[in-house]
Image 1 (tube, helix red, strand yellow):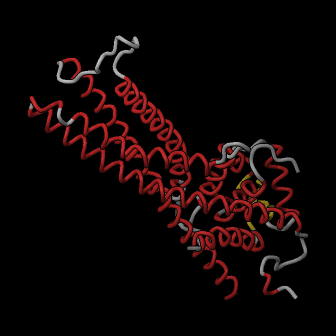
Image 2 (cartoon, rainbow over the protein chains, first blue to last red):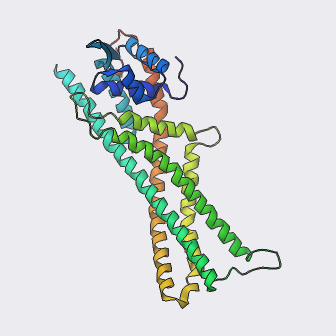
Image 3 (cartoon, chains in turn orange, yellow):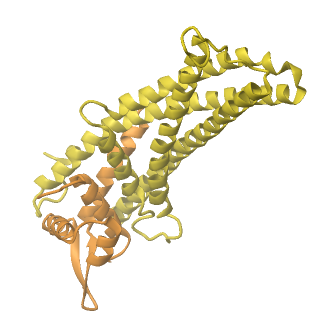
Length: 88
Length: 243
């Protein structure tokens, strides 16, 4: 996968977090993440292939939502950051 | 079902904890930023006072015709150092200002959105990635962010002693005018107070940035772990649960 300016963890974690609270469309994600269309497609494909987000059909509109597995991955991400700040 | 609820609560707890920490870090940057601005304005105030005293003839630059200088060597060195300090204060203001703008934006995403069962906030990751972008921008091969922050800390440290030195030379000058004397004392005490605030926040920011620098490689490892997952394996992070 080709990631130009932003790192993989930046994009993946952001998409996982954005799709956590509600189902999101690709356009909404594009606007929020400010990524190129090709980049967001690649990201979504990757996350779907890893079963971290799911693609849902909501009134003929394709939306994305973070799966339980995605939540687990995100929780791990948060824990890594939390643990670092808890270090004295 | 209970396990899923616990996991969701765990996620919410993690978000809460991180949000509190990020708010504190953002607050620290804000305090530092405003103390820099006030210190900067007071330094400008000092230059105005100095120029005024020169104009009314209560201060002298000690013109030296021998070397063709607009003042004696000490005055020229003092002025040069003062301008260097003001310029570096300006650079620091821009540097921290850019971070605060982006940090505030990501933390503001949280406000105005209602809590759901699965998550509280949307702005946690953008705050982290904002820090990361900040690191990438300033962490080139030769000048790392840590070096830059250490340089700022050094300047903030010596600027206090310089303020004391400057005022020891100028407190006698304004003796003829009571208002100027009062203004000088207020200026001196204010500069000292904001210098102290600057120094404390600089040290705290340095400590925070050292922490962040160690954290980012771990987050990159997290991304690598995700790449290695297949869609089948379920529990992938908890090392304790692996055989």
